[in-house]
Image 1 (spheres, rainbow, N blue to C red):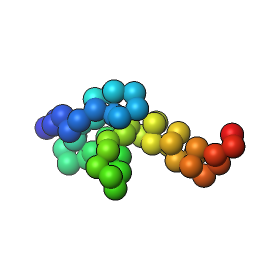
Image 2 (cartoon, helix red, strand yellow):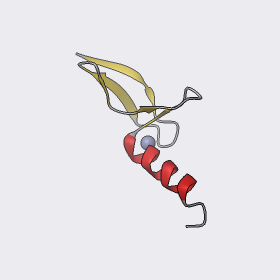
Image 3 (cartoon, rainbow, N blue to C red):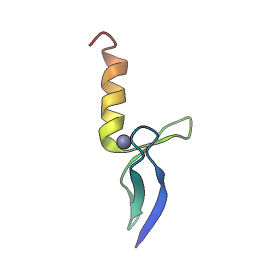
Image 4 (cartoon, helix red, strand yellow):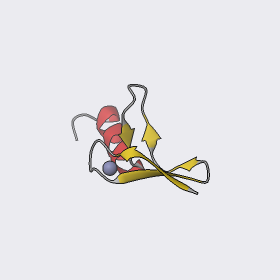
Length: 50
Ligand SMILES: [Zn+2]
């Protein structure tokens, strides 16, 4: 089963729920990101100067 949950806020990639597994990240402020953009955003937060 594949259910469209939404699109990545950053790159507009479609994010699906696959058999109960969400292939993205739901942030606390209810935004959806794909793993790639989430990792990028997280790195920027940890290391804002780079
Ligand atoms: Zn993305």
